[in-house]
Length: 128
Image 1 (cartoon, rainbow, N blue to C red):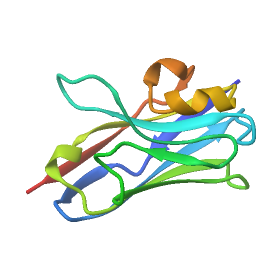
Image 2: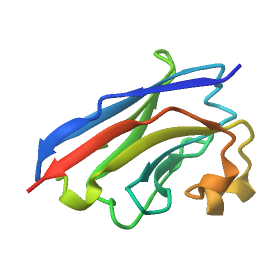
Image 3: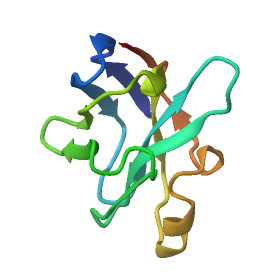
Image 4: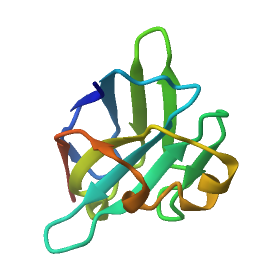
């Protein structure tokens, strides 16, 4: 059974940093696609960063150069490092997993619809 538990959210000032963690169980990183998504009030859930089972990564244009996705297989943990935070980064952040991950999934890695497991989310609030 796949379980995803996020932590690490909080309130920071603009320009600050946070590191989000997603502890996973039942996930095999060599065969799963993994992603981080966010949803602000009144907005649709959007893809932030994702990592393919082959280790390649993909980022939304709005976070390129500021956010970094990584995984620690030994710790069964997916991370999202958030640097140079902006007020518009304020949202609930979710970890997600897809239990198949082929090359044709690459183009859709930032689409919420392809993921079949989700965590409960962790809130990130960035103030001016």
